[in-house]
Image 1 (cartoon, rainbow, N blue to C red):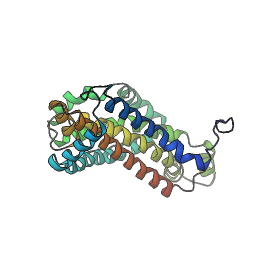
Image 2 (image 1 turned 135 degrees about the vertical axis):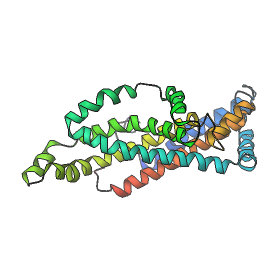
Image 3 (image 1 turned 180 degrees about the vertical axis):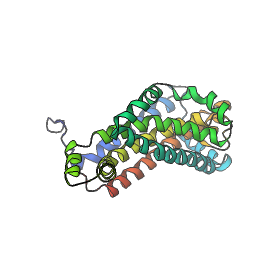
Image 4 (image 1 turned 60 degrees about the vertical axis):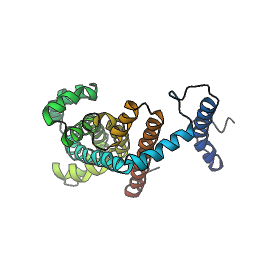
Length: 261
């Protein structure tokens, strides 16, 4: 037992499936005991079979497939837009201190502001159509991705830079051939966190004029007092989040297989 809980020791392969399913199984078991044992009210914790029925109703009656596509499209576009702006700016801030000093007083406070507080302003600036939702998701990802990029660039060992200068590289060659390649793996690792943030914010983004989307279905469940729909919608969001996280992890392993374990 002491060897099992040794600090940072790898888990034996034969025990990995057990630990992987133990917590989910415990949650489902507790859920079944509380709901089927009538310990909690149906409006507070619906029974698992009612959640499955609610999921089927969302699929067959409420266009769940279209809702998933709409929300996924919004998140993907906002995510790519945030990456396309945060990475160049973060590299510049990490490489050049004057640029960092210029932007940091503006960017730093944004990380401590509740993103939901920007919804009225975004509605005022962009209206209630698609651009407002993209802008909200973009802002939510951008303010957290930018400091990660800056930190990743600054974490590149100075020895790499000095070696590149010794070999005759120019300032811009150091940026494109040393700083960026060395920082990209850490930045890509952060994409998994940014993906989770985007899926966390999508329900808020789709409060106003959502169209057929996951935010619309979850709000519909609230207005119609259908907790089984709410649970089903949350399970769908969590499942898609895990799926996209797995895809990013696999892509990370494929692109950066040269990294040390």
